[in-house]
Image (cartoon, rainbow, N blue to C red; front, top):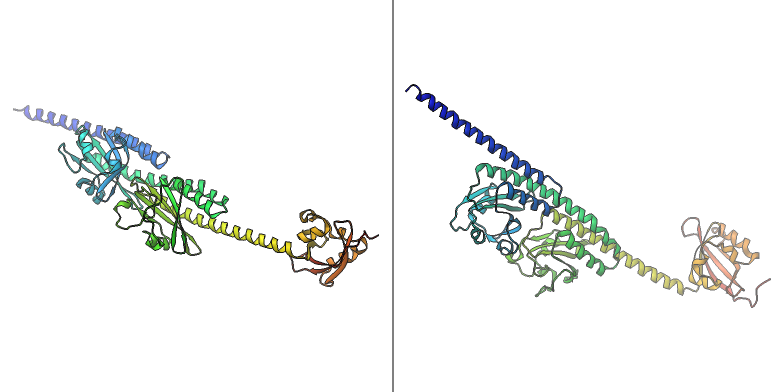
Length: 461
């Protein structure tokens, strides 16, 4: 009787030791798993690579048969990236039902687990067929409001413990931060790498063609299109990656879904256009996720840049912001192209006028060096106008008249006109009168010249 309390004390001590050892082992296991996960989450990588690597490590450290990232759209849950789920699975194509457990996780912002083998709306049929029993739904909520779910599935039936769920909450939070940082960096790098290519185009049509291709790469879209607005009529410009024009194309811009956002200078985004009741989406054919950003010129919408993804994978906030910056650059490039065309037109018109003016025009500096000669002046002296630049104007006139011309050029405010003999291309001389104008840049003088006596038959002696 006296030994019984000692036996019970020893048994109690053993149980406590076993519990402490188990707790220590669990803590060590949890710490090891957390370190593994934080190491992969902390590595610099593209958003896609970061997610894939994290899912692979999660599958390993939590002994999960399937891990995936899914996005709730309507009453479905669409898989965007997975480890252990074959391509072509229903989760990618038409999504899984958005069950009670998934909605609870999204509503509370905390992980939720379920353990059962019987059919359930929380267990999609394709997961049931591979024997999945234990599941965990972990909310992925980013700072920009985009929400997704991290889903882990086990066929072993081993439940996800409370410690597992809290660790998954922590991992999901850090994963969201890393994804957002990677998305910002990736989007800005793509913007810097691509946007400078706009400046090489001076024709609006080729510029828009280039812009749609660059926009596809910038937004990681499957297809893109540009829509220009002529008056109130939308005109579609498809890139080489886009499908055929959309049937039932709207006749007026105001009929397009998202036009109200465009005229306010805002982007228009839809995660799945098939769930939107509005008609007339101006997006590439076959698109599910859709992004449209306006190109603003002189306070009005000049064009829309549209991007579509065949899968309902949302466009994240960083991509939308960078797309808006790119649209502003397209607007600036269109303005530059317009100015270039206007300048080219003005120069051509000026050249036509200059070629038609009978008066001879030459611009010289204070040392009588020719800075510019009109085509008509070059024609009279028998030289290409460009070849006359840099020569001395007095060398083209008779030696007896050079001092008079030089004096007039040096003091145009006193001498308003000067007569002299100008050398012609036929080795003769023609008497001309030049009106001097100093209304050109300071230090330059323009000689507006007219012929006052036809060329002599022979060169003067």
